[in-house]
Image (cartoon, rainbow, N blue to C red; front, side, top):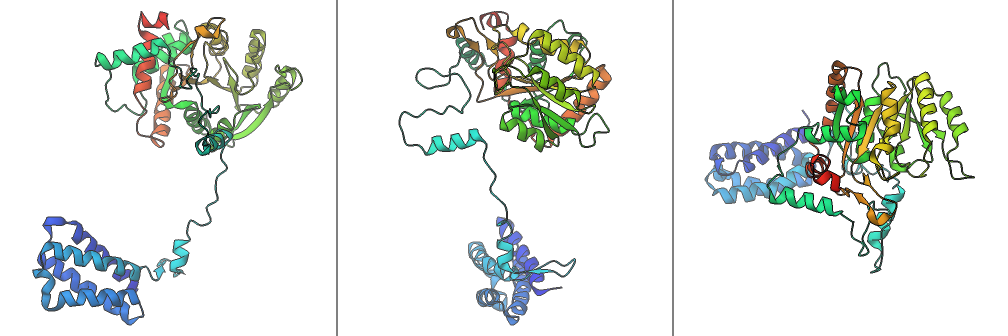
Length: 434
């Protein structure tokens, strides 16, 4: 056995002995010290200066079994003092015992030197520039959220009231959520999105899991869609051009091959409908198609009701999987039900819809923006990923896979924002006011 490896084992024994605190046994300390002295002597004789230095200290204290009689503080001090030197000696020649390869200390220290710097997305670059700017009148336009004239994020009166009730009535339960999230929020959120009259909702066929923000939900959806329905192979996701960078990254990192379909007509600012149809007509069966319902980001382009119906027919005929993002339900037309109609129509027609809902900015507005009512839950950013299954057996299997995938990313989602959203969506007085 190589000297440095054996010395490393003795160093670990010493460290365990030190960390045992008041339970340290004098005889064990004595034996560990003497064994380490022996290995340090062998290392010193082989040209390890750190071992020679540590040996001088440890040998002196260990002479005539003196370390066993030392006070505990003195023992710990001595052992900690030599530990660093012995560790350096034991790392002097790191061996790969399976194949005999060796690496120098400098090579070990340079292990991570080849890691490249990641390119920051545009929002992160703006955030960094904002933090570095010393101006007293700066404003970060990359941070989501409607703002008051003071620059603070606008929180509607209904949400302020909901927060006050949660605190004052002791309704907030700070317990740890299960990996699938806050059940009442999942029920209220899916009812809000799919509609209370939806057959999928009424028959409890919707698999759902709470996620962290739209991006987190997209990443979770991509991980699921890269595996199912089997056989997945190299599944593609077609996304509108243009799309925001974080969507592209989340889908690609989740295991999908990202492709684009033409969406924005650069000449008139509307949808490039004919090009969109042409691109999706050539998409292979079971490809995923990313669609924005109720506010398309970043183009702002909205399809008309007849176009949504024709698109639904196209998706169904080509056996494509709609991945629907609905982040602004109610803020596109001012009516939450009207904004969700494209989603509800696709579900009604039996398409295998995968839905990502965000509750950051869902809300309602009149024709004047001064009458805006939204949730403003940007700090908590509760989201829901759901799939409308054909039966409860499919729902249960999908739920099990979503929970399995989520568990590899986090232990439990946050509760505060989910409980606030649930209160607003279900309270008989608060909901109409909102």
